[in-house]
Image (cartoon, rainbow, N blue to C red; front, top):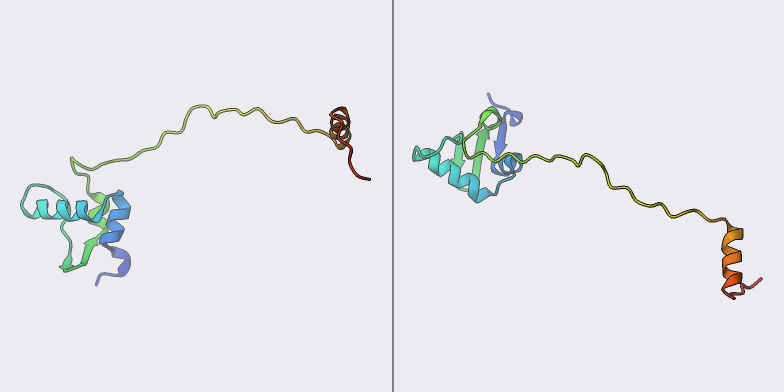
Length: 102
């Protein structure tokens, strides 16, 4: 008997591939017409569609879109603002003519 861990609903398949529901439904429809090779669902009734997780994980179709991220080789360096002491700030304010209340 299949457990919930062995099955994926339509939203789960969409999240797995990063595709919309309409795209997944179109791939299933094309597979039924022998146009594509997307795994067919185990159960389909109206809005409820369940796929075997192993079929989804092993599917690598010609039109499977793989999104990869390659981080930059070097991270941008930012100039750090130098830290000033209270005495330095007070001297700068006095030079500008700003008088602080006691």
